[in-house]
Length: 456
Image: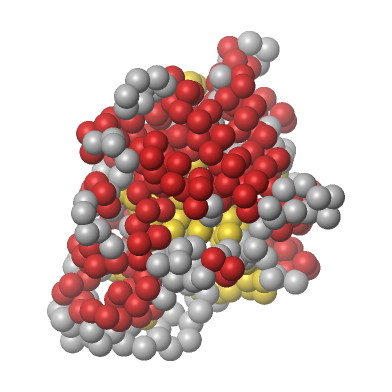
């Protein structure tokens, strides 16, 4: 989740044009398109697999402080370090101490994967010193909610109070999940619309390929991606597949209306988060928030609010692909490769859209609902399974990456970053399937083996 790192003054919103300018301001010529990769990982004590608190010796605070040795600059809230900024982006904390890198906007996947590698080397170096390890899964495999600490961030206090009012699994989303995401650019409103539609339609394919959360509290939970299932009962007002994106005439205006109708969580004022959970941003525009009578929003308040909508694809001044479980390094590199291949080539984007453009709202929703449990075995509109569709999608993404012709020093293009996904398709087994095979095999039902065998 977004961490406020820029505390400079923001201009007031004077008109609807100021709201729309956030989206229109993201338009860039193709030469300026960038790739921003985000990934989260669980932090645990190597001695007993416990999730460390922020304040304990050798805990999350000390991890962040240790990372300043690599040039990262601290960001504080109420005198407590809660994030870091640097040349490689922002390091921040999810509600229960999950550590996230929101990477810098980079030109190609070679740079993005190298950035992820640097980050993991740095956190491992400090983690080894502190007795901390890092786990790349979509959900804590063994922890109860009550086992987990809460980070000292004001926005999380508000969200933790609000989540049980609107769904049964929102606290699990906050406390027990990790994801990999990629942020991508668009050249125009029409380009945004086409990418948004392809991203939404094919998000379940990404969910299946990255399915990596089959355990809850030490036992199989009946899902391949329980993290994805959690989003189905988190908060219906701010999640989902956004069927209106496929309506004729969709664009910045319609997404703006959607975002205005998403209930608020907070307003950031004077270094603290003011609880306005459930209130209307439309009322805020009119100066009618009960907690801030007469006060009207700034552009920063609007961008904060946009970060509190959680659909499968999210629009800010770029598009976020949000369907994948957390994973280890190869998968961190593979997620942006999948979406860059599909969306940053006209040839690939056209082919992907041709594949999904005839699907109905009900068919898209059915696929979204089936994938968390069935993953590659889920049926797709028109016949076949996600396994079949994933093979087609990877072929299209490969064409797109070849067309981009972004080469490393050895002369390789970006297509090799798809290899972990090609392995999933070739074997017919997601990472969740492999974890379950181990659980029912040589692990003898003891999920704690995941810490020794599948940490970073």
